Length: 627
Ligand code: ADP
Picture 1 (tube, helix red, strand yellow):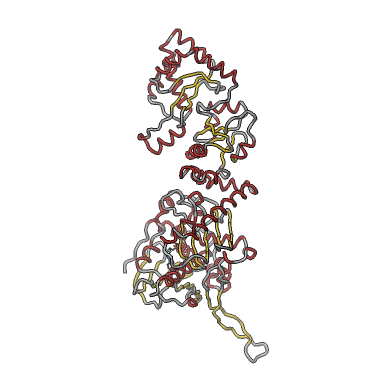
Picture 2 (picture 1 turned 60 degrees about the horizontal axis):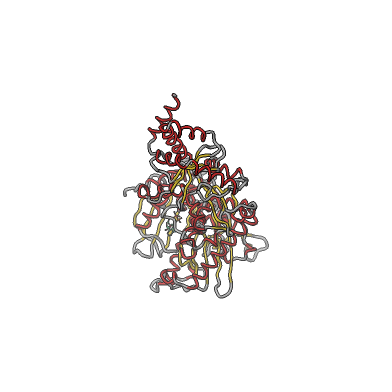
């Protein structure tokens, strides 16, 4: 029989596994048990909805067997099993979606990703040098056997197997200096691991355990007796009393159930009684799921009806802006037999979804209030999603989210909320000021930012594409408008300053018209400004589209982007360059024309925009230097 090769990605993961980047080898058992439990869930659910499938509930179980002599650890379940092609697809390939990202990101940073890949099964290669999977599917007549010794590949052939389900035989590696693999053939070790990681599994995990018993009819003679024991307590964690659950329980449940390697940032466990009764166990991950911003990422919570899994990812239970939340909902009020389509319209479900949304929101608000550091950690990871939430759907949810979003503050040098900003606004400050740029450092250096800071105002620094769209959707916070310091809407001058500036701008109207023409009317106008302190020039935008928005739109739409910012070239009224310009306007118009081109290009560069004709500008500068 020909040995089949693993798909390339799988090979790489296997290599990583086998070379033990995973320090915690013992988790393999948890992974295999969870798979078994999932398989029984699937069978159980199908039996409830398909009268042709008969299942005796009390028989459903996971069995563990130790065969010390042959160094085998055997884990079997009587779940739905796998067909030949499922064996091939599930065990011959690893979750395809992530493979690319994995290859790219994982060099040198192996640890974090493994658990996120649905590679649970492969972890068994950390302790086994040969794995045999015998499986009979509910949907196939014949049973099949998959055998692999690791990287070299695997074989699949028909085999005999009674009843559907899966039997996995791990041939445990020989002991090595650094690792005593034989431990995994000891009853006490297996008992310990099941208690530690799989206690909540809802089906009995059975193993034959040897006990010493007093021999009947004797005083103190003992004999060894083998008995089948159930190793786990079987109460699903979400149905236990909160007081009985430790932090470790919650975290272990999360890492095993939701394929994450790191413990979650926050656990939300809630049970609601009343018209709608349900238990919900929700987790906020501590890092971005590896595929979060890909099409493959599916939001949703697991949905249980009275302890039976009826849907793996119920998207309707989570709004998009909380799509990073993982977890499950168990309710006795949902009918088991309803189809997915019907679920979508189910009033009960909508009610639960609403409650869950509010619960997540209030927990986040609480975190913000009571544990600022934790909230900032959260926001750095998932803040973008909340900002998208504010601006999506025409701002429908902006009021819900407005107190959860944060921006970097020029004065506080950290993330602040809009409420905090407003509470610090100075007397006479009209608006909430913000500035946009690629990085905090670049914004800090923007000429337009200088004057606003000079007057003692706090500025929010916006570095993400979505930021300005978010503020524009919100329009105001607490009746305070948002104003981009790089637009003509900025209004921080006193009445006298304005008056004086206006006079001077009128006086030099002709010169400005000439300068505007020198740069082929690429700006709406040229004028003096008070908004600059040290820099000679800046570009500001007029109208609804700011320069940052134009950049974002152009990135997204390319040349098709018709939405351009209308710009004004502003010249620092108090800069020595002003006198020079005035003189040139009188004496040397040709030079003024060239200098205007240079100044305009400088202003564009400062904004991170490109120059139309860099060669011309370069030549002009060289000319100046060689003068
Ligand atoms: P994950 O469980 O994270 O999806 P695994 O590598 O552990 O990833 O398993 C891959 C797939 O193989 C599972 O999603 C499931 O479809 C199938 N599978 C694994 N173990 C079993 C089992 N005992 N019974 C039925 N199917 C299984």
